[in-house]
Length: 305
Ligand SMILES: [Zn+2]
Image 1: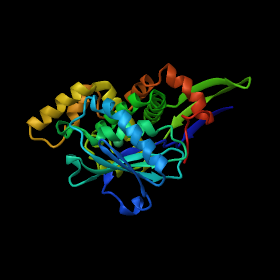
Image 2: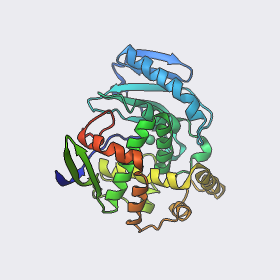
Image 3: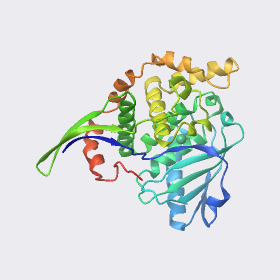
């Protein structure tokens, strides 16, 4: 087999959107409650499992660089037909104020991403107010870092997907070669072709918690997570915190894109340089996972649902 492949895998989104949905929460009659959480689910076992994961991950999230004071939250476990569940913080009011009304965790057929998603969503939930000037896609990157810390295997898969997406965005395909059942398997891989409506780099950094869902579809939205993660990976939390303080000091609602790009040493129009940035995310563990992800083996694999 030697074929170029263009996968449309979405894997997961974990974001923010508007308002809790009474309709989606009807039927979630089982409740488990402790410490900061009241978890609602269709089955009692699900409510108890998610509650226990939330409690186990809380110390790690609160020790993270973005954490403010914790507060109570209602979590709704919404059944989903997808392979992997997603998660989202539902917010109300002005997006930049990040007022969270509840969290939804979609419960898919496979649960391997659950710890990643819970840590990701709790990081959004308890973001300290001094981080409010952070562009949304960078908040997503910091939330991804927390998710990766919660689940090292999910971390490898997430870095693999981010790296491949950035390479594809820059116009490259990733060559692969491995042996399976005595046969050589080789080809080149592109992951998630961006479509019309994708903002430029500066435009990506201007999006807020609502507008970043309106970028021309799921492939484009997924790329925003990869760009956000790569920038966070490059700059680090302390540098981003400084930029938040500087923006707040100047009375700005959000850090200007130029500050971020200057700090990262990235030109607005240097699309090709994102190929190198993507490649840097693909280390030994990510390369080792790639054959399994391609062949649909093991818990962390590409999926098209
Ligand atoms: Zn998120």
